[in-house]
Length: 109
Image 1 (tube, rainbow, N blue to C red):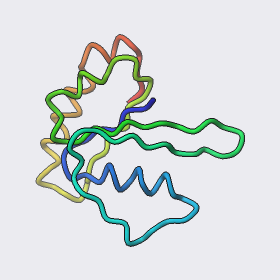
Image 2 (image 1 turned 60 degrees about the horizontal axis):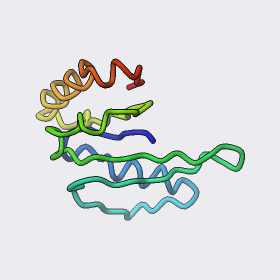
Image 3 (image 1 turned 120 degrees about the horizontal axis):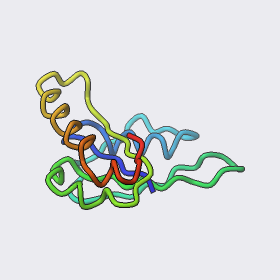
Image 4 (image 1 turned 135 degrees about the vertical axis):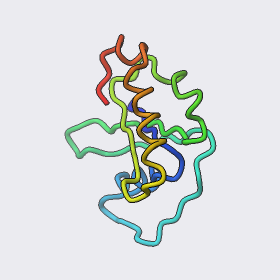
């Protein structure tokens, strides 16, 4: 299980929905802010197992660390166009990278 996190409003849900539906993209897809958690399964093809991704809402940032245990990879999503959010995104990323639970498990970010 992968973990997908990032600040509020960065497009995590939209990104995962589009990745899950690459064969039939919906350009009119809309989302609402994630409050809590979503789990998305992405198919890799006929010969590879699907990937399960746990997405945590940006409003859950204070408790993200509760989900770090046993996570092999973390997908950190930012909105590089939103300049006002880059400072917050940087601080959250630095906290993520320095967390002992991720360093102990040799997680890839």
